[in-house]
Image (cartoon, rainbow, N blue to C red; front, side, top):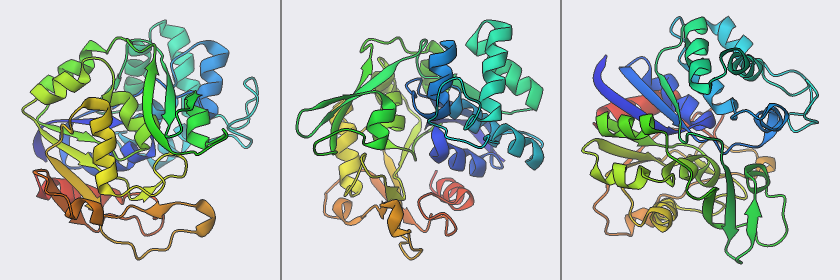
Amino acid sequence: MVNGKIVCLGGGIGSVNLIKGLKNHFSDISVVVSMADDGGSSGRLRRLYNVPPPGDLVSCMSALIKSNNTNLVKLLTYRFKGDRYGKDKELGGQKVGNLILTAMLDITGNFEKAIELFKKTFNVIGNFLPATTKVVSISAKTIEGKIIHREETIDTGKYRGKRILERVFLNPIDAKVNPKFIKSIREAEIIIAGPGDLYTTILPVLIVNGVNVALRKSKAQKIFVVNVANKPFETRGYDVNDYILAVKRHLGVFPFDKIIVNNNYKPKIPPKLKYKYVDINGFKKNSNPIKFITSDLVDEDFPLYHNSQKLAKTIIENI
């Protein structure tokens, strides 16, 4: 077991795969999740009950159940048959864990207390922090200057024009950062951003007021994990350098000193998914002080994503 506090910034399946691998090696893991999710079943619960989006938090907490109880994980992540983008009041498409966390919020009257109750009930290790003190939304600007509102619309590309993003914004723009988020950065010995959807998962955490300054001041090892494959409507055609430039556009700097990239492109991605592997060549041509770490990180069964154990091994070997 590696000593030291590790803080993971993101949420979603990228963070889930990351912490699944890290939990067997680190005893003190914190996960920070954006409160901007308004899509799918989380968005439906958010609109119906005026609650923070539970989905990413539930997914990450389910990945850190101490007992490795696979049946419990299956229960919490079980999704009822139906359309996750369906009508708000329908049960179809909803995830059991999301419903439980929403119920716990109703019982406790406080989101932080609801998270702690969820952890205690299901024997979850780690710390789970909303990035902001209140629910937020996001808007994005495309390269044509068009402003697109709502995370779900941005993520699914359901708008006209060139669906290539330039920037993302929080609404309200001055949303207050969760003080515990800043405290976790100050106390961290390792900070990892990604993997995850760049514009709808990672950047909405990084652009919260105060986070940029805290990251720059932090003495922790700061690692950015580039996605295995580019998601349509978010990072189509991006190489490694494009990920760096996107972060710089939003923060003014790239505050990470190490970048981890997959270099195994052999597993075939089904063409119908329209995902393509991230090209590493853009970075190699750039004279950059960032430590560039490449390794076979792909999950050969699901080549859109990282293999949890491969990623954890690479991180441990480079800290």
